[in-house]
Image (cartoon, rainbow, N blue to C red; front, side):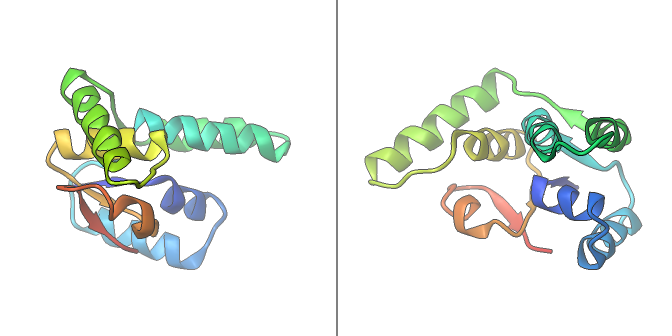
Length: 130
């Protein structure tokens, strides 16, 4: 199965036609819709920053329909390795992206995102674009 990245979920919440089609295609494959708690943080933060009435409630309602995967000790170790190895190569990645990537890898899943620039740096992460 796949994990939904924040950019796809934001697109769905904004009623972007491409994002809605991508989500529909994923749903048609069967299985649960999944994301990470880190993506949930990003979505709620964006809702708060939008200052739109009811935005947090809308995000919370959407997230309640998804299976939420958490940061465990394996994913935490992987995130530390991802961040450290990238820094040693002189590259940077947002820590939130490293955490999302590590949870995805720990569950042997594929991340559905348009943010290939950042996530493509994570060795061993399977990425599917939408």
